[in-house]
Length: 216
Image 1 (cartoon, helix red, strand yellow):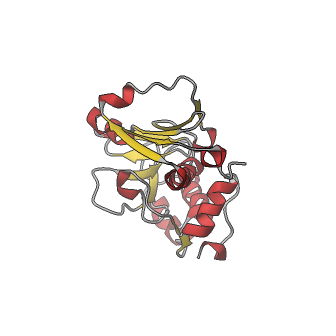
Image 2: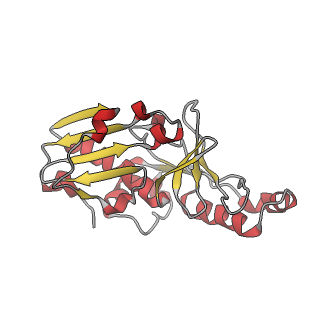
C-alpha cells in the first residue's frame, strides 16, 4: 500500500491523498547495480544520478489510470538514459498497453512522450501526478462531463479561466473557471503529428470543493 512508503513532498494535499488512497508501491529498482555497465556504454555519471534520484522518489509507484495515453505508465520506474547530449532522456515507466510512444523524463525533468520526437506534457513529474489526481477528483465531483476532440479543442473559450498551476502544464494544461474545470490534452496529437487526436474534457457543475479540493 502507498502508506508503507513516504509520500513525496512538493505536491498538493489532494495529490498526497490520491496516492495514499488509490496508489500502491512496488519495489524500487536498484539503479546502482547498473551504474558500471551504463558508464561503460557511454552514459554520463550525472545522467545516471538523475535516474537514481527519480527512482528514489517515485520508483515503484503505481497509480490508477490516467484518462488519456491509455492510462499512462503502469508503474513509475527509471531506466537507462538515452542521448545524445544535451538532450538526455530516460524512461519514466512502461506503458500499460502497446503505444507508438514511450513515457520519458526529459533533460530538464519534464514528464512527456517520446516517439522519435520529444513532447513534454508537464514541466515536472509532480505535474503529471497532480494531473492524474485532479482528473480523478473532477470526475468524482462533476455533475456533467463533456469531451471534445480535434479542431473543437482550439475553439474552446478560455476567457474567465485561470491555469491550474500545480499541474505544471506544457502540452497538457488544466483550466479553472467559476464552476468548471477544463483539461486539455495535446501531447498525443503533437508527438504523432495528428491534430485530430487532441482532446479536452470539460467537468461542469462544480462547487468550491469540486473546483479545488485539497489543493493547498
